[in-house]
Image (cartoon, rainbow over all chains, first blue to last red; front, side, top):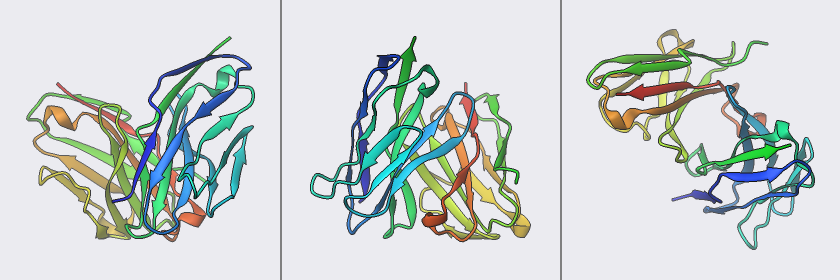
Length: 112
Length: 115
């Protein structure tokens, strides 16, 4: 079945460091891809999305490009802030199963 | 507009007890979903309501879990009797038409601890 694999955390960075969180997927067809974020004490929020190959999703300085050839959707940010500390989830929408399928989540901790 | 509301935010119960989680979706959203994250693993789909009907309950782990959505408004998820492996965070989400293009709005989750 469809699945999402993302790098294990926690990821610990200093403020202004470059961030990459890897995400790869397995799916039949052409899924839409998402990054969700959960800040402490809050719900899941959509961070960005891409619906077709080579699309780049971006929001709040974060970017991810839908790479069909490598079945990847890596999350990047050029300069992280303490306020970016959260758990990040990569997900795909499986049309065949009509549901969101999530990865295990990656905790990011950014220190001043 | 108000978001998706879940309560309680935290619940600690003993093994064998019963717990009921509640989700209030965004008003007018016919589609309601339950997901859960167990032991820091991936967030997994439990079930999907369209109004008061169960569209897909393929993710429900066993018959100790019962979800209802009477009247097509709020939903409850009852676990009876609770087991240790049921501990985790239970998320609810709603969407207007079920299309991922318009997105799902998630609640802040209920953290369930079974001791």
